[in-house]
Image 1 (cartoon, helix red, strand yellow):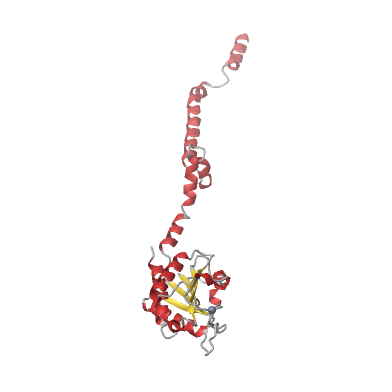
Image 2: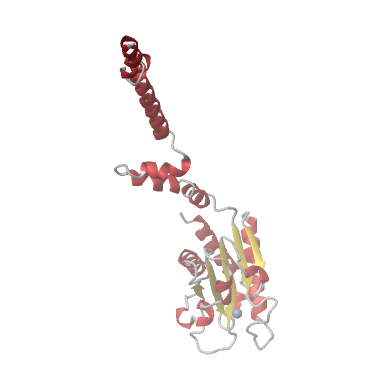
Length: 259
Ligand SMILES: [Zn+2]
């Protein structure tokens, strides 16, 4: 009985784990650690897109990667726009057209007639060079958000004789878009072609705050030119109108040729 008891009790005093399990325990630990390691490596090298910035950011200088990644979609668009501005398009406002006659001379000559004559010749000369050019009314609905390479409004000064200084031309540029290149080109070409003086001291707010400047799209250079005084410059503006027209055309071509 005793011996049997001892024999029956002795299995209960053996180690808790059976020996086969004890021998395979290191293998199990190895497998678990290896699996964990592989999962870690997998997670580290294939992060989801949303956590890309977070994974890169903690590294030294890692902040550099995220801005470059974000800037990529924007940069090519800007460059494409700058490199291909589209076809040339010149807008010419025929001063007072479909609005009123403008200045009127005693013999009935109107500023509108002078403006129309010069504007039509400029349009014809530019079209002959393959440059799309359209004539616009003084308050043309197309002026609202008008988009073109340049806009020029053609006007002429009073037919009243003030004094011998009431002669010459003048130009005012838009203050909404830098129009200095267009303004300088037309001023130099007009002065050279017509031989007229630049009559700067009679530029009025009516010119600098010209209504069309406020209506057209931002980024479109625009000027208004007073081609001369209808009294002292009458011959130049009527029988010799091809000269002022050529001066404006040359100014536009200068502007289009600039670097
Ligand atoms: Zn006018």
